[in-house]
Image (cartoon, rainbow, N blue to C red; front, top):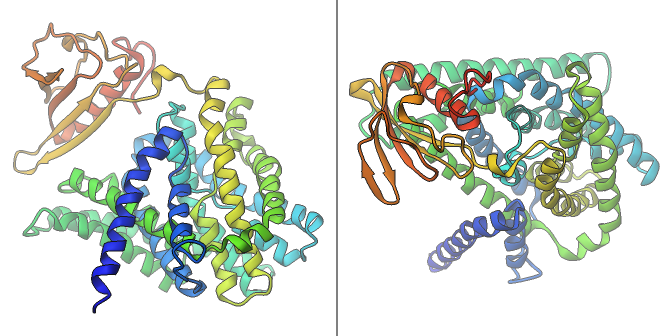
Amino acid sequence: MDQLPVLLGVGGVVLLASVLAVRVSIRLGLPSLLLYLGIGVVLGEAGFGIRFDNPELTQSLGLAALVMILAEGGLTTRWSAVKPALGLGIVLSTVAVVVSVAVTGAALHLLLGLDWRFALLWGAVLASTDAAAVFSVLRTAGIGKRLVGALELESGINDAPAYIAVVVLAEGTTVDWTLPLLVVYELGAGLAIGLAFGWLGGLALRRAALPATGLYPLATVAVCVVAYSSGQLAHASGLLATYVAALVLGNSRLPHRSDTLSFAEGLGWLAQIGLFVLLGLFASPSRLFETLVPGLVAGAVVLLLARPISVVLSVLPFRLPWREQAFLSWAGLRGAVPIVLAMIPLSQGLPGAQRLVDAVFVLVIVLTLVQGATLGPLGRKLGLAKKSEAHEVEVDSAPLDELGAELLQVRIQPGSKLHGVYLSELRLPTGATVSLVVREGAGFTPQKTSRLQENDQLLVVTTAEVRDAVERRLRAVDRAGRLARWRGESGR
């Protein structure tokens, strides 16, 4: 009991330091996971001497954090943004995983002398990309919507097949004709369970009359957690069930939707911080130096061989331009997921598993530094991003349940083509109007002849029925200007 104030104080300081690290990581253009890992290492045996070496507990806590991260990712993903890239995202998260496991396993079998099963296990551990790592870098890169949508879907879905592959290889399951059927069942059942919980959860939340607004975000996250549990108990993919349930819920007409998304975002950050600090605590710098060469070899194989081959082969039906294929190949950032997956064979006492875990730590750090620092410039070099399009219009909403209406809060970013547009040229759907403009700290009621400017903040009142159409129109004008319709821009 005497240690409780100390533990809470240390936890609070670590959390504050991690939150401040977000600003530092954004300025440096690197995923914040590196700073969180660094905080964990400083607290660990090489720094303040906190010893933590329990792989079973690390695996359990890591999976719990991944569930929260996937729930946040699904809830905050707009279906309109990922729908155009649905097919591309699915093949990247399934076909590309299989190809990556095979290529990585074959290369490491030859280069590191690993036996085939263990080499493929390395490939399975390294096959999953990380949403948090990718989007902390792409946040201000202004990359095209189809590529961002494909990467978002890939990072949300590919955890499931990678997890199945790691479990199968770590447990030494007999590989025969029934294995593909097992994988199809796990993914199919996980998808069905996620869809069911997402649809039923949204229906129940809309009809529930909870006594406090703050209970709705808690109930929404609880539905996602129950979806994961149900998936695992049904011997299906709980991770896929979590993401799909969250995706359906996030695109439903949830009560107090903006509060729910804000809560989910905060919970996602907390899960990421806790997970990376925990993994940093588990890491041993002395062991990491011993696995430096295997980690660099594996990183080179993944970055220069497995990822490009898996992307090229999986996107063949889509006939993507070579520039987009090159960007997708370079955008396969690794983060917490490979480290957590590497804990599975370690917790089972598989020989050589500790070397795998340490090598993955090295690989994640090196690839994050290399890819994180070059991903944005590469997008601009390939002509896939422009500085003027780096910040899209920000839209947030607050529900007015009794009136059946919503308030959209719109911020016009620098470089937006909303700049210079007259209010009458917005042509918002019937049932929506701009009720307030805040410019340089002063608010005024706009007229049809009012002209919008960069950094303006707009308050748009809209009925629930046309809310999505209003947001699509705002995004279309933001990207293409007053002639958005003539230029074929739909805002999706």
